[in-house]
Length: 254
Ligand SMILES: NC(=O)c1ccc[n+]([C@@H]2O[C@H](COP(=O)([O-])OP(=O)(O)OC[C@H]3O[C@@H](n4cnc5c(N)ncnc54)[C@H](OP(=O)(O)O)[C@@H]3O)[C@@H](O)[C@H]2O)c1
Image (cartoon, rainbow, N blue to C red; front, side, top):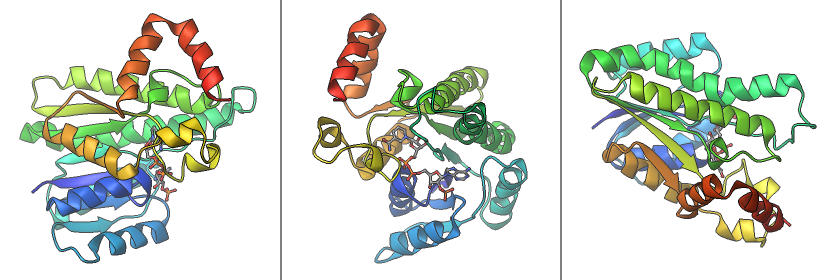
C-alpha cells in the first residue's frame, strides 16, 4: 500500500488515476480548487468498491501555503506521501497573438510552478527515506509545441525541463522521477476544442486508459510515459523532419 497525492484528482485523467490507485488498495489524497468536483469524485469512486482510502483536500496548487500544508496534514493522518502525481493543469487554447503576457505567467504558474511547489513539499521526506516517486504530467505539446496553445506549450516545455533536471539531481537517492507525455485524451480540457467525428476526435483515448499507462509506469519506475502509441512516433519523426511534420499537422487539423 502506498500513500499517493494526485493534484487535479477531481476530474479527467487525475480522477481516473485516483480511481485506479484506490482500486489497487492505495490511500489517495486528491486536490483541486472545486470542492464539489472532489466530493463527487470521492463518492463515485467509493460507490460499490471498498479497497484503499480516499481523502479530498481542496485548494490551489499554485499557492505555496496550501501546498506546504498538505503533506503535514497527510503525515498527521496517514504518514509520508510515497507518490506525488503533479497532474493539475489548464489550457486556454490561445495562439501567441491571442495571449496576454499575464496569460503566459498564469500558464506557467498552473502547469509548471505548481509541480515545483509540490515537489519541494514532498522531496525532503522522500530523500530521507530513500524512496518515493514524483510524476509530472506534461504533454506531447511539451515536446512539440502547438501554435494553437502557445502559453500551454511553453509551460509544458518548462515542466518537461524541470522533470529532466530533477531526475538527474535525485539520481542515486532512491527517488524516482517520471515524465508523462499524453497525446489527445478525451476530457473536459480537450473535448470543447475538437469537432465530433473529426480525425482528431477519433484518435482520442479515454482518461482511464491514460491512467492505466501512468500506473504501469509508476510500478515499473519508468523514466517517461508517452501515450498513446503515436506520441513516441510523432516526436521522433518531428525531431528528424520538423518542417514536414509541421506541414502535416496543419493539414490534419483541417
Ligand atoms: N486531455 C488531454 O488530451 C491532455 C493531453 C496532454 C496533457 N494533459 C494534461 O493532463 C492533465 C490533466 O488534464 P485533464 O485532461 O484530465 O483535464 P481536466 O479534467 O480539466 O483536469 C485538470 C485538473 O486540474 C485541476 N487544476 C487546474 N488548475 C488548478 C489549480 N490552480 N489548483 C489546483 N488544481 C487545479 C482542475 O481542478 P479545479 O479546476 O477544480 O482546480 C482539474 O481537476 C493536465 O496537466 C493536462 O495538461 C491532458
